[in-house]
Image 1 (tube, rainbow, N blue to C red):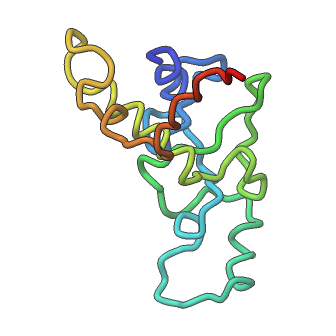
Image 2 (cartoon, rainbow, N blue to C red; image 1 turned 180 degrees about the vertical axis):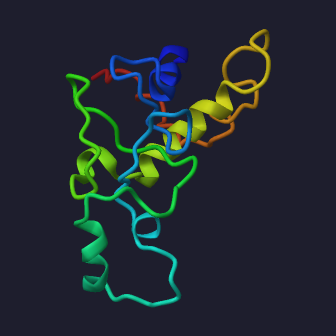
Length: 137
């Protein structure tokens, strides 16, 4: 798990952090309304925000700490706001990152999951009953 976190933070072929605002080289065109529309006290409807979605300028607001979707399987990454496959910070992706970071928090002598983040989660379904005894005529 450590190498995956290192990869996300910039130890990868692109030498790019996929965490917005971490390091010097990170996604600048995150596909996120709050990051791409300038703070100018004007309310925009959905279509009104398209002019910022479609611009090639970097986001006016830095979504610090959000993880972009990331590279493809060949380490390719296109920092283009309209290509959400690379630049959208999803809840599912960021939740996984947060869970991994919490599990790795603290000193390394306590091991992974020292905070019992995973072992404290109850199972989604009850444990099934044991199978019945073999039938005998």
